[in-house]
Amino acid sequence: MKKITSGLLLLFLCVLSMQSVFAATTPTPTASVSQSEQQINNLKDRIASRVAQLNLVEKKGFIGTVSDVSETQITLTDMQGADRIVDVDELTKFSSPSAKSSFGISDISKGQLVGVIGLYNKDSRRLLARWIDVLKLPQIFSGAVLTVDKDNFTFTIATVDNQSIAIDVENITKTNAYTSAAGVAKSGFSKLSPGIRVLVVGFPDAKNKNLIVASRILVFPDLKSNPKITLINPTDIAPITPSTGSGKTLTPITK
Image (cartoon, rainbow, N blue to C red):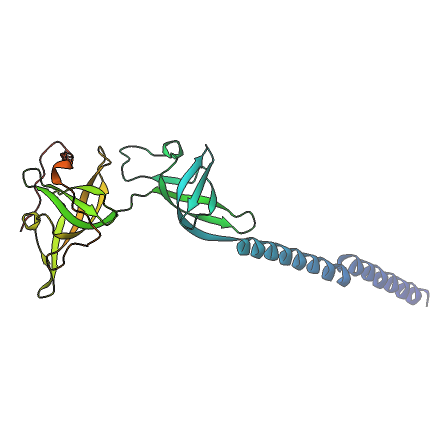
């Protein structure tokens, strides 16, 4: 009888010991749920913060004239006349069509026309530039031919505001003529004569800003000169020094 009682007592003690072990190793459900909820809430906060940042910043670009420049910032006046502040950092890339070597913010100067692309902050209204390119936009002139220098392949035109523009024709210049009968057809420098109406697209010469190097010329032989244009005396026009570029005489395509 004593043996049976001792055995039952030992079995009872073993059961109690096993229950205490299980209780110690089993995690508390409420604690586990609380920790998971905290992790989810933290993740929600990070996502919300990231979404807010993405909504605040967008890719944007604009064109403007440099009004001020420092080591880390450029101020532009855009095409609508608004001031734009552009920040630059070590990732900003610069380029210029006239640059022969490395080009950076130290080469940017007031009055230059530049195009900027980067990350625009809607809150600060500042743009962190990723690309800054110096631009050279073509100029367009419409008028009547005043003089023609067939030896140097240059001519002058008078505009509606009675300005005299010196035009240089090079081998890259493309000349066309428009007539009601044939439409647009290839033409050449030899077709130019005083009084004829022309449209010229070109860029200022690198060494002579008063000389326009033509890239496109459109001749209108059927049209009369604009009556607002006063054809001044050709002898009053200063001789044109043609652009030579590399130092060689450039002969335009005349066929």
